[in-house]
Image 1 (cartoon, one colour):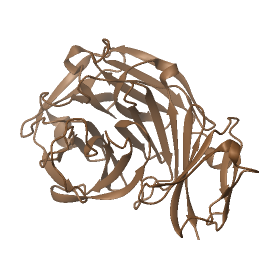
Image 2: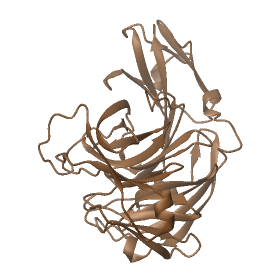
Image 3: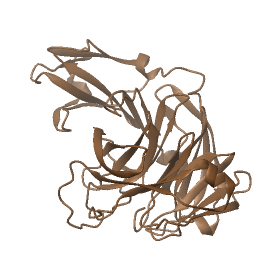
Length: 372
């Protein structure tokens, strides 16, 4: 959640993979005006409110947007619930919001689906964690890189994505699925240049969708492919700005409905003007077509030595190329007009692993390469 609000949604183009049929499904009930996470389970959307809300989950009928059921978690407290995820056996609620960067009680509540199905009151297991590389806990409201609002399950682990108010990047951290006290391990970073608020991983398509917004209320969607257990962002990242499609909104949650359909929710905001909580839906062709961006934007050779070549067949003019090293430090920043024959000189780089960002007018595409 952002105190003072922001939000948005999308129906855009990721590479050459089309998102179609964007619809606004209507206004959400006032009981969930501060909704901050979504999953789709038993043909219902499940959401929750964020900081200070009741320790409850709300089922939303996707036809009427009405709340059809409320489930109370008896042994939980909503300090700052920010996202929700699931696997075959459990529902996970991320009490991970950390707007000041000072929390030492970060946790994820785990609820057995069998208990959830059986009644309207449940107890949860507790997965507590701390970040392996956080050393400063000095409070600084909305001025920290240790806030987090996105949670998803991937390859038998929980993955948290940070919301970095200072750097506008996001870092992935893994936490075991089991109750107990754990250290969250870093699984890579992505210079997303925005504030990340939600995520959902679709095991059918092996794609990760991330939602968020800029400090000036411009929303975006990012799609990641090629995730690995050592680096969530090892593959291709495609970020699309969607302000032209839906205007302003404070998107807080995203859920996969099927291999090619997703829903977003936004919370009520009065930061600059009043925005009501909404529900949106869109379709993709992820379930039927391969991720052709890997074909239409190619870098080679990889690994490379002195030069890195690229071929752009995305039917969009390239504006800029930026390369980051493994620490996130910018090492090359070139205007596309200064690059001849789609050939970039990387001879000044040390041997190692790098990320290259291709900047277009309305989106960015990130890829990884090795300098040998």
